[in-house]
Length: 220
Length: 356
Image 1 (tube, each protein chain N blue to C red):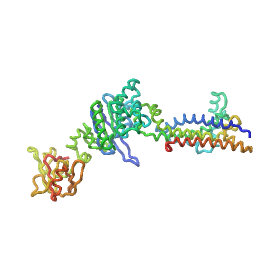
Image 2: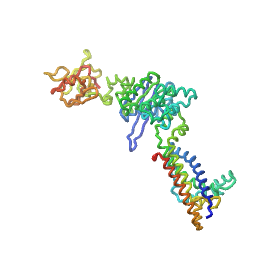
Image 3: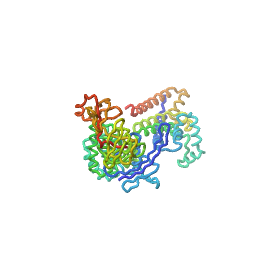
Image 4: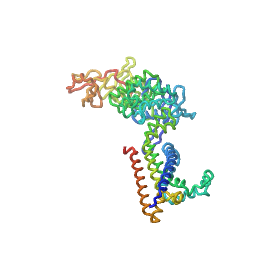
C-alpha cells in the first residue's frame, strides 16, 4: 500500500486556519449579538446559523458565485494576491469556515451571555472601558466554554466534504483533503487507503471532542 | 452631595405590570436609607444614578458635576460617574484574587500609587491574609469587606449599597454594620443604602426616604418618621403600628386635649391640629406605648376592655394580641406578672395617640 499522507496534513492545515479565522470573526460577531441591541439582530444570528442547515451543494453554489474569478469578490482577491481563490487550498479554508463559524458564534454568544451581568456592571462601575471589561472579565469567565467551542469548530472543519469538493476541487497534492481523498480512494477501489484515512480522521476527531468535553465547565 | 430628579416608566408587558418611578431627593454626607417594599423602585433608583439604566427625564447632580440631564441630553457613561457600587451579591470577580479585584478598580492610577492604595485598603479592611485568595476561598465577611474596599478605592463621591445585608446571618450582619459605621466615620462620602429592613434604617440611617410604587412618600430622620408617619401607607410599610379607626368627639386646643370615640369607649388624646370634631380618622399607636393590665373593678380613664386572643413570643419582648387587631408589647417580666389574667384592660397613654 502506497500511503500518501498529504490529505491529512492539508486537512489539519485547513482546519487550523479556518478555526483561527472563525475565532476572530466569530468572537466579534458573538460579542455583538450578546451585547448590542439593534434591529435585525436575530436575523443576523439566523443568517450566521444558516450554513448548519443548508445542503452542501447550496453552500458550494453560493461560494462559487461569490468567489469565482469573474465575480467582484473573486476579482478583488485576484488583484490583491495575484492568483484566483477557487480550486486552491485557500478555497477549502473558506468551505471549512462556513461550518466552523456558525458553531463558534452560537456557542460563544451563549457563553458570553451566561457571564453574570452584575460582574459586567461592577467592571463598568469601577471605570473599566468596554474593551478592558471584555478582555479582563467577560472573556476569562467564558474562557472554558469558548475553548470548547473552538475545539468543536476545529473538529467540524476537518470533516467538510461537499462544499470543499465544489469550490476547491479534488486535485491530488494540492486541494485533496482527507474527506475528499477517502471518497477518491473508495471510488477507485483503494480500500486499504480509505480504511487507514477513515480510522486516522476518526481518532483525531474523537480526541478533539473528548478535549472539548473536558473543557466544558459542566464536566469539570 | 447628591441631587436627583428622576423619571422612568416601564410600559406593561405580558409578564410584568407597568411601573413608573418619579422621584426627587437629595442626600448629603452620612447614610441615607432608601426604604420600601420590593418593587417600590429602590434598586432602580441606584441603577439610574450609577448609569446602568437611563432615566426618561430628570437630572442627577453629584457635587457640582452633572451625571445626567434629560433636557440637555447629557448622560455620562457608568465609567465616568465616580459612584462606588456595592452589589447585593458583592459581584467580586471570581477569577481574580482579592488583591487583583482591588487592583482592577485602581487600574487608572499610576503604578506606585496604585500599589500603595491597594495595600492601604487591604490593611484598613483587614484583608491582608486573604489578599492572595479568590472570593470563593475566603469567608463571607472577607468577601463583604473586599467589595466595600473595592468600591472605595477609586475615591468615589458617592457610595451606593444595594441591600448589602440581605440574606446575611446575624453575626455577619452585625459585622457589616460595624464596618459601615467605620466607613462613615473615616470617609466623608455620602452613602445611599437600599433596604427593606426597618432595623437597618435605625441602625445605620441618618436620613430615610420611604418609597412606595415609585414615589417618595416620606423623608426625614428614621426616629421622626416612626414617631409620626405621614399617612396610612407609611404606617403600614413600617408595619409596627396599631391602626385604629376612631371618631373625634371633641377638640380643645387651649388644654391641648381631645376626645375620640373608639368602639364603645371614649379615649382622651392630645389636641390634633387640622382636624374637626366629627372627623372619622385612623389613629396609630405603637404597641410598646400601650399597657395591658388585669381588670380590677371599673376601667379607669383611657382604659378599654379587650378580649385577649394570644401571646406571641418575640426575641426581646412579648406581644399580646387582642380582638380588633390591637397589639401590646410588654417586657417579659411584666408579662410573667400578669400572664394568668382572664379579664384584660388596655391602657392608652394620652400622648401615644397620633392621627394619620
